[in-house]
Image (cartoon, rainbow, N blue to C red):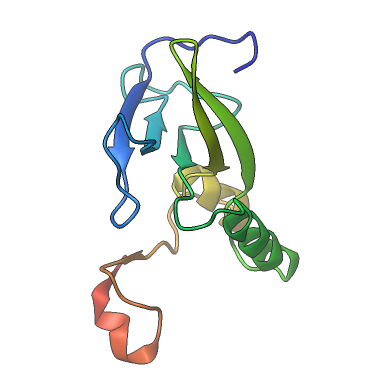
Length: 133
């Protein structure tokens, strides 16, 4: 980040519909504490870079999360990132705060939750069985 270099960061591709191979602008998960236990980067354990292939404006995530936070709902922070790999420009990404214990501590005072993971369903009464704590 700028002049900061953080070695030994675990990186993996992510996504379901948005999944792309490494040569086709993938989304990424970075884990700063996977290889060096307890390490943080600007207070974060993890970072998510979304490729925004479903949103050519690169604004829907940022605006949606900002609106949710503005009305007091727990939502990740988001920014834009110009991503380079080994000095080569990969593209513009949406840098979204990973929904994990760090984010939960910011909203709820501890890292325990509530945090639900969906199994491909919308958050509505008929689909509640699709969500896991």
